[in-house]
Length: 227
Length: 227
DNA sequence: CGCCCCCTTGAGGAGCTTCAAGAAGGGTGG
DNA sequence: CCACCCTTCTTGAAGCTCCTCAAGGGGGCG
Image (tube, rainbow over all chains, first blue to last red; front, top):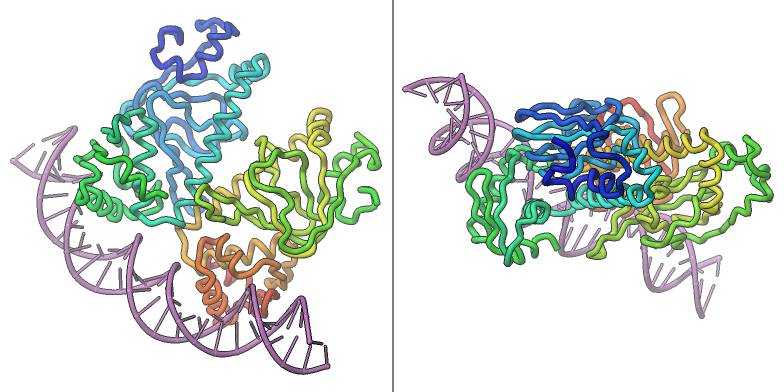
């Protein structure tokens, strides 16, 4: 199977390279890989030799500090590029771990570099994507300490629903492939607090939640929490 | 006055450019500027057209979010380059505000680019500096939510003393040009909490504090707080 | 069927924030 | 040079949010 056949092409960097006929898809030599849940795709500190794209499934970026404490930096879902920030660094800033059965495409780094060198628009694209992600992560980190549990979880749910493009008519249904503990870690809260906060939203009729499946009834109201 | 005469040259990017005889110092056309306390040097969102170096005095980087909330991202002291992270972006991510009477040098961006193009070592230098700063800021932001007030302030004091190169024999004397409110904002705490935490350190004999002048008596013990 | 992990809910407690008031410095004008 | 004001810093008390510890329920997988 080549990139030309891939249904996710338009979200992927491949679209830029193919569309511009820089190279033929067969020449890409992209590594496709299939992963089970909780599998480590690459480790923090390893040399970066590819740009990853999530074809299906989902992954988390986990940062481990010198004390061994782990912090989830973000999640990536089907159709997303994994952590383009890292491209500016020589080594991976965090480990990548799958949340479920996942298919990944790995673009060798030399190919990306080539694309940057030969295609100014591609370079700009990567740069913009990197900048946007950097900015957002920055704001996320900043907001964590300022806001309460309700605000953080509301912002998280809205971010998830927007990224999965599931917003219709002030409501959305989405699936959260990560555990509550993952959400808690990401938001800087205790798992119990996340659970209680979900319950509060449920009591107010803002959401329906059954295990990993969430329905947001009133996005507007939920958005009021994250002023 | 030229860069060749500057006593702070060895900490500055100028040293690289001059040392390599890429250009003569007189051709640099560096803008020197003098600022009063609480003066805004550049504003968040403005196009980046120079790399700033703190010749004397000190500054803070202030980020303002869409709600108008302000968050101090960092401080820069005499002999430091201001926010090399921004070089990867087109616009300033934060505003720069002086804490006291301050002298700044501004290297036009085209000069820096030129340096990067012609001098691989310079490019690597800037990149490393940027990467180190990015990494540290990231860790700072991550640790804020994890640790308590004692830990954060201890880490802050140690960072300050290390950066001002004032560590001697397990003790250090340093000056904090920013207000307690600035420290509190930077650490994500209330000003009262910062004040109380200073008092706790004083009670334990770890530090002496009189206004902006701090003496750390036992760096080792202080460091135990920030495991 | 049973084990294990994940999620939920409760009670208690610690840490920080908020509100409030007072003390100390620095700057300005008389 | 002193008096005044304003900002900054400090300290106290009350309250709230979140964390920790603990127990129970439910679903998935062997």
